[in-house]
Amino acid sequence: MAFHFDPRTILYLLLISQIILLLDVNVFIEIVTVMILIIPFFISKQFKWGLIIAVIYSLQLCMAFIFLPNIHNAVLLYPLSMIANGFRELIPGIIVGIYALKLTHSEEWISLFKKWHFPKYFIVPFSVIFRFFPTLCEDYHQIRNAMAFRGIERGPIAFIKHPIQTFEFILIPLLIKASQVAQDLTISALTKGLSMPVRQTSIIQLQLTKTDFVYMLIAFLPIIIYLGEFI
View 1 (cartoon, rainbow, N blue to C red):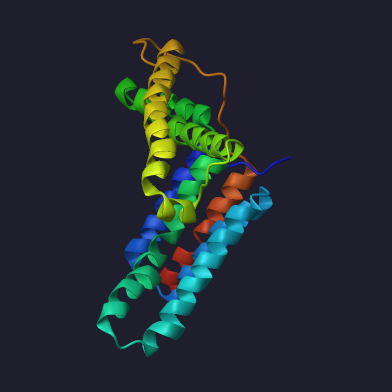
View 2 (cartoon, helix red, strand yellow):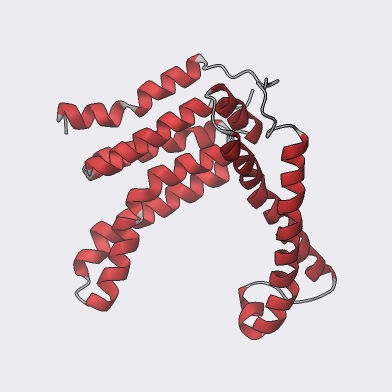
């Protein structure tokens, strides 16, 4: 059975990640937080995302503590410091954001918002936006496959060599498709009755499992370390 988070657990983890950011914890607690948040990627067999985040975070640590102390040029120091320190602090929140996209479905979020009595003018746009970008990514891959089938160059090198052609064959069809996708998703959401001014039910029944509660406790561990001043 694939690892799966309840949406309320993801909101809890998002809160934890923002608390860690506001507390300005030391590097050890930060590393513990990132390690705890990365584990579900491997449990749910999302190895690519887990490895990508681990590599990026490791490079940021190396840059912050090995390379930056030896750089004295301000032109290089400030942008590299932003990447190594500023963006590094955002990693926990980014991980939770990927959870929201990869480990939950839009129907679960909508069910939760209905349960919490969120207004319709929030639920309908959320339903459209949540599905918009994944659908647009699929269309982008289809456009690239069509270009490859026709023998048209693609990728960064092709963009440098033929920027106008790249915009013509990728950007313009993508913009046209984006407008159509947004309209179709809006119609789909309205067809499901999300905007109806009546009490709505949901087929999906949300329930916090033992896994959710255990992981909530584990995720609170960095804050306990910080408050207890164990490190």
